[in-house]
Length: 359
Image (cartoon, rainbow, N blue to C red; front, top):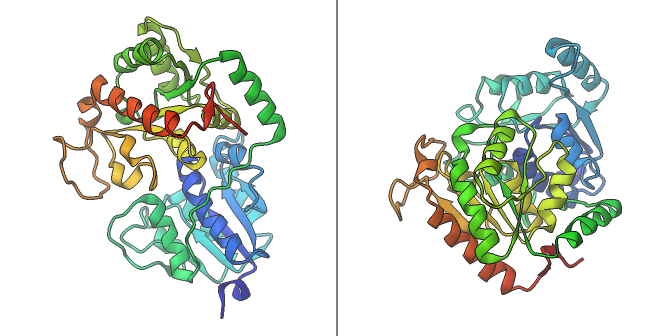
């Protein structure tokens, strides 16, 4: 039986975070392409839901409020009760954390598809009825596309289809028109310190970008304490003062990235937003493997590779961490990739004006 004839409503369990949400969107889009009548429900946390609230492939979001005032256990019960109200033809257990497994268990479905036992961390295989075959390590995006392949759903083209509203476009234009220079949006921190480059490195980089290239630097990112701390340190150390737009609004973060000429980011959610929006992104990798979690099939030439222990190392795709990797990244390495991004993607394509893409 064809996929579209067999399934009518599907639930996706992927609670967090923004980067993972970007990797799930091509799965949802492919499902809707294959069966336009399909109803897709996504069990998700509040930050990625705020980013994706109007996505055309998702019919319903069910929120798991991790920091809900009544406590985590109460929130599990509330969410589980909501999940039990309907039955699904198929559940995608895309997240392998134990809490996601508990929510997968609460969903009513005769088919709950998850990862093979090797990749299903936290005993997540206990909460699924069917499992995709074991697979050698590959890019995270391809890992999620395996679920489609298991069901015989066409995976390409890989599409994100992010929607920016008319009001957001107006606000975006007002912001960038006031700058009157091309913009480089820089993510200076993540919630995981091991992925961060040095504050002094960013401070010098900002000086080069503004003085030598004539770009306006805009700092973007999330509200976590580590991100706020490194942002404040970068601002203190830099001899030029970039615009500080770090905040807790994921939709504004998206529009700032969308309007930038170039984005510079470590391995964190905004990197994958930039890739989804096809904004040239210079990505800084050292702690994690860029072949597994770098920009998917585009802008790989802009990866600053500190993961390699020596230049040109031919390492395999893996989940292995390199604790010293970010320290191998030099200012010269980042500037070289930024210059390549400007020359190859901004100037050569001529698709941006004053840091804002022509709409």
